[in-house]
Length: 578
Image (cartoon, rainbow, N blue to C red; front, side):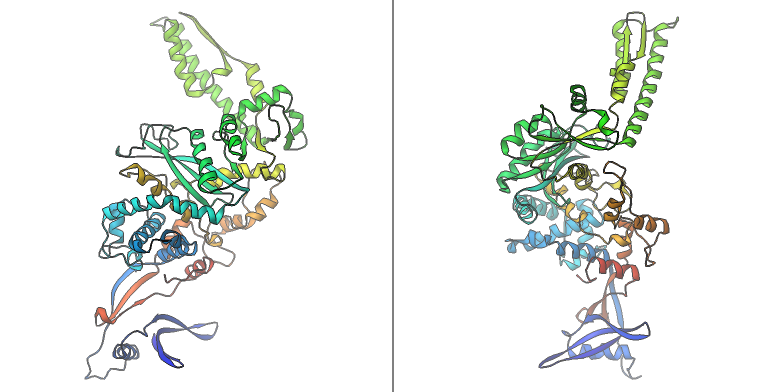
């Protein structure tokens, strides 16, 4: 390392701390710090120290490392947040609340990098107990848990302003909007929104909340709303339509949702009166009705996998019928497994009824035992049951089983003619993309999808704090990533082009498969998961150096980047400094 004096024409010269290195046989320089603001004596002391020019009788100055904090992952996350303009969005018209903006920015980054409780987060950000450079970079100083909760309360009050600004950025008249709901369970009983309901996490006996996420067609989150944990999915739709029409002032929108969300009742009662278009899928009973009415003929799929059909039950609307052979095989296998499991349980009940010693007697008692089995496997429609006070027999209803099997793998997309889908293939892709683009990252997603653990148990103290606890974090999960050095498929266009049919199983591109096989990129760099890349970047430290340990003679020094780290920052179009 050395100190360079850079002439600056009529202005005072600049003094830069630099290091020299050799690359491809050429000598190059890298700037480590700008020390132009230092007093001349301190600059000279550092210059002499680095050149080892002190005479024997002179006191030698020592360069000391005062503190070293993990920084690279903070620089990547905070840099991307600023590149997306989220800091400007938070701070818009809020200059007097600069600390609140800084705290919320810190909370978003912490949720991305290392999700933790508010108490732990306060310790991570506090200058004296920090475990990363985030608190230092944002100049937060002393941080306590209650201050973080106050920041969430402030953010809740800004939610409508922020969502309206996001809508202005990403939504326009005639645009497609994806909407889906999820849930998260709770530990504790202090949140008034937490209720017992359908638990998607498989955590029976846990309170939960339900939250709905509005996204653009590319999966960019725009708005989130939290509901009581016992609210059914379709009941959340009216609020979103009102939000799109009134708060975002969008005249015409195409709403894409799954069949459990956009039901026939919601189409008639909510979407049509509001003038909104929609894309959704047909439920199994609707497909069966179309087949029985002759509108859907299975012979359509002899030579193709997609077909447009019409029905008087859906005037002025488009229906796409699809058949997926792989899905048909899987449904047939699953149904047979459930039938066999049900038969085994029913046979055991029949044996109890017909045994000589202590038999099961009474029509009601026998029916109760059978009901437990039927409720577990949901196969009642496929069995004929004969129950008396002292006898029980059962048999498969082959006619009903064959009728259901005939529609295995058949499903339908349902959308209005103005939905913006130019072809059957477009309509199918728009609907099937819904889950992938609105799904919140899960901790079990492995590799690079677990960017922000939004589904683990939460303990917000009050309901109003919940929306932001689960909201803006999604923005970082959708930030562009250095996919070429991650296990993600970075060549999805090639994968789509090689897909023989829109209903065929999606495959990763050849480039992504090659990357997974070799565990390295085409240019020889090791491939990372999202989490392991963050861990690698965290080894880039922010080092506080000082001459003779004097704070007034201190400067920040960053280490030389490894090839992987350098490539990651290049792909993100960021510098290590923030």
